[in-house]
Image (cartoon, rainbow, N blue to C red; front, side, top):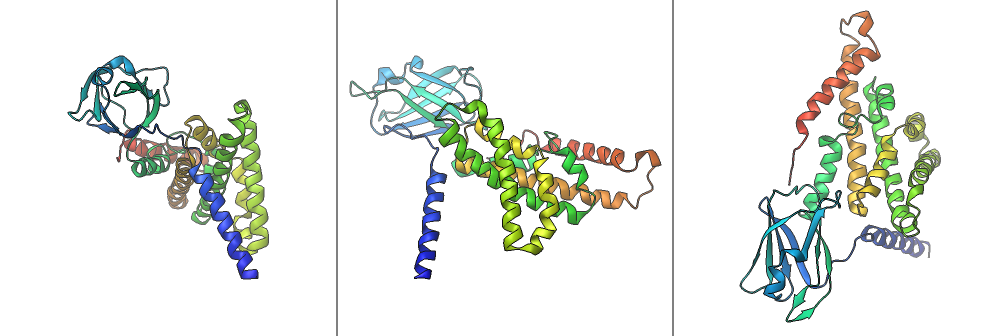
Length: 320
């Protein structure tokens, strides 16, 4: 009986997690089978059935913009239709920023003389590649410490030794993933539907504190040895502004659950990498002959600036 209850509980938890992870994704128009980027300045649209040629070649029927910049509409230069009238290629006058998802609106789709309604679809890279680009972007390309200069107080305070840095990095990653997923759930299913977006900063700060307290309590009961190792760092996580920046970014970009998970995981691992690199250098600096005026924080700021210059080499890098 106990085994049955345990298995039932596990299946229930997995089902809830599955619904959460699959939620937040807007359904595409049923008549549109696929949208994808082509070359540097084209978008391919594949329909389920032939569309009317007059409608397809009218550029006024297409409105497209980058998701972060809805006010800047992109101009369609040319429209070509395949012989079977199921594929439309939109060619733009300028190259498209394929690192950003695009929102495409098609007004009153006409097929066999009948209107199928207006379609709103998203155009972006291969989805797994897009998820991986979010992960690598938050981890290395747009590292929150070396590129955005966030979390510096905790960064300099816990990067004196490798053991301290690794402990802080692991603890921070656990907390930020947990708090970011809670923030996504509340934003998508509570704040956004009830027009309470203006409360997101207050709610997210509360979630961070709640997440830290939850991890603290669980570690204290489940693994006291691990609690002793991480307990000091848990309080410092609350003072780290990266942990509030990630929920704000995922809310602003309207990320779904998987995208939010990749952003939070990338931010946490990126902070761990930054701490490990900095602690490795600072341990060697303790043995170096440094002028007295540069010892301590001054030389640490110089080293952090050099790391930031090095990480600038990743800016603009595109993997997919």
